[in-house]
Image 1 (cartoon, each protein chain N blue to C red):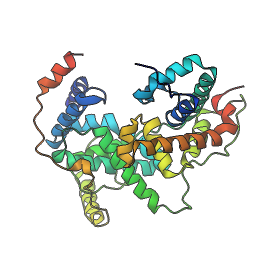
Image 2 (cartoon, rainbow over the protein chains, first blue to last red; image 1 turned 90 degrees about the vertical axis):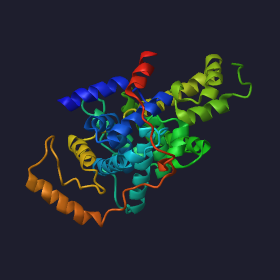
Image 3 (spheres, each protein chain N blue to C red; image 1 turned 30 degrees about the horizontal axis):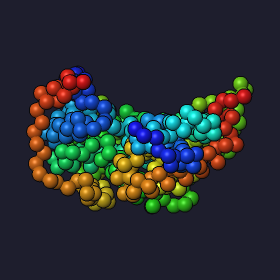
Image 4 (spheres, one colour; image 1 turned 120 degrees about the vertical axis):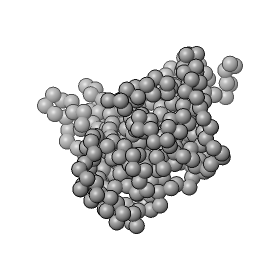
Amino acid sequence: METMTAVAALRAIVPPVSGERSRAADGELMRRVAAGDAAACRFVADRHLDGIVRFAYRMLGNQADAEDVAQEAFMRLWQTSKRWKPNALIKTWLHRVAHNLAIDRLRLRKPSEAVEDAGLSDAGPGPGGHLQRDQVARIVDAAIAALPDRQRAALALVHYEEMSNIDAAKIMGVSVEAIESLLARARRALRASLSERRADLLGEP
Amino acid sequence: MAERQDFGLEQLQALLDSYGANRARWPTGLRTAAEALIDRDPEARAALAEAQRLDDLLSGASDPLASPELKARVLADASARRRFRLPRSISFGPFWKPAATLAAAAILGVALGVLVEPPLPTTAELSVEGEIGELALSSLYDAESQQ
């Protein structure tokens, strides 16, 4: 209970991720993490764990691998806390580590390993004429999973995690122009692969 | 801000191809010119609408969340400051497990340690430029109150 009250107190002083205040607040959070403050650790996990799982899921295609990557990324964050750079952002740092871990996993993956929910040829609409939410998700997830790794990473970072093009470029170790090119190719590929089922997916008549 | 004379449909399409229809995501240097074009050109508005349809499709993707078990493992890792990740088969509930289970987990963790890559990343962001300075809580409150 004390931890939950402390977490609520932290939420009041740490702003949403943006700008210099966020860097300073993240620095203070990591100082507390380094000091073994359980409330600070819980606050960081509450704030960032879902986003890292979501990003890793887009990269790897299944919940189990995504959670492994997320756990590894956070473990490294805890270990790095005593050496935290004051001007770093936790969100960017975690995504960079998760990106590298995911890429390593993808390189080790055999071509025959399919993603969990390959559903581009999924069943059609139900009796009401509309696809259910989970059917839509399976189809869209499969289309994203079919993208080349770097295009998928750029899309996941910028479109889904709402990273700036600059931060995404830092995370992937490429130029901003390269990010824009990857995004454009990804979106064009998705437009093509989803176009046939667009009406079903959007619930249009 | 003066309107860019070199921003036409081709540039707008390139912008939409990369960033989609959400104007908040457009690079700030291009936003004004793009919006001006959209305001005056029906073809530009059609391109924006097409980009919005793709955004709507993409919003149908899964939105996975961390499982409670994962969160418990992450927080347990924080407490233990482990140097290697315990596998998913070792589960932690909201409270510490009995000592025997913890002991078994520790033994398994040591055995796994030789199989797991060194946990410390070596990216440039992790270079230490000096001691992390103290940041008084009061300064965080002051910054908040100035909003």
